[in-house]
Length: 242
Image (cartoon, rainbow, N blue to C red):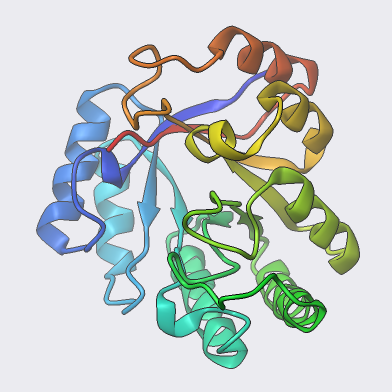
């Protein structure tokens, strides 16, 4: 196992990106000794990729990108808008020469339909993923889908669900993005979920059940670490405490 250790910009700044806040996060991640900074792209896509790329290089950091779909790009309701936004995020990632875009790429956080997920919604989800995965492949970018807990979404809440949809889409550059905070709510056994993901696990967020740094809560880190070794995890392990 040889993961890259990183931190999310959310460790230091609010989700709303500004050039000043972004530079601060870059400086803090470098000073803390991380190898990588995960940049949560703003839905507005007001993001100066060439400048950020230069700043990352100056501070000796690699980067990865993420995107959380806003409510107005909830895939089941607004598939065309979601597709366009994900493609814009992929373009920004490409400008940064980043090969990974992860995040909540299935639904707007906090958007609920008032019913169970339907077959039609699943079909729409897979159609969007297929299109953006093909688009991402042109730039050599892998897309990671992050399931979140049932209190924030009804579309993708577990590793098993995302893996089933990934298998259906059958795009080699589509992967699973796990977050230990959400896993603690949804997974019966966190280590087993990691083992089931295997080489489809492309990205991992680390944080306690109370959103603090690992070791400041009660999650089973020894079991999680063993599961990652069992699958020979090679992706990024990114701290995301709030």
